[in-house]
Length: 226
Ligand SMILES: C[S@@+](CC[C@H](N)C(=O)[O-])C[C@H]1O[C@@H](n2cnc3c(N)ncnc32)[C@H](O)[C@@H]1O
Image (cartoon, rainbow, N blue to C red; front, top):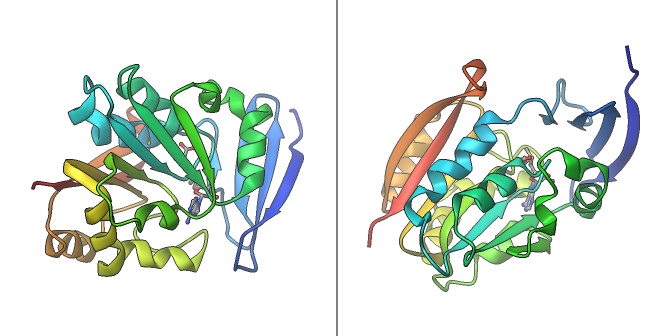
């Protein structure tokens, strides 16, 4: 058996934890120090792809469509977003940790087919919050996979995203009929209630971690109707 080899570590801004990147042949892993299990494994990505497919379904053929992906990780959501829109669309990916971007420009990029090299991709290295607080309707789809669900995992500052303040800010930067899609490890009834209160029409979908098997994840699909 090929042993795991550590590719690097990265500190998480404003947090004591670290991300640990490892590789075993063509398999990659991202772990959060102090948490059991993996944040991501390169062999498990079905629900990350479905997040983009559902979140971008309404803009498939729309010239000039603008998509924001929150959290680069191993690039599966970004790569699928690029496949889900046409050649005149643009996709911005916000990633908090510079080392994640650097690794995706290098060895990690092979997982999802080097989506950072696509000319439609723009990378923002920093907190996705910055792009969600402009108050200007900018995005037709916002795809968020920065935590394990609607509570801050990678960094507690992310809790803001899932509270009414964050949901209102996101509503403001979505264009009319825009879609907010959020990945979650499981259902969260109270979060659905908060989304509805913020004015979204909400639908949830249960998606397996691997095609047809594995854990059941939840995708929240929250549409801005006006
Ligand atoms: C679970 S991974 C995303 C996986 C990704 N969907 C994929 O397909 O590979 C979460 C990522 O979000 C990033 N992240 C966490 N909080 C963030 C924030 N506030 N702004 C931008 N990126 C963030 C983490 O550094 C990590 O790379």
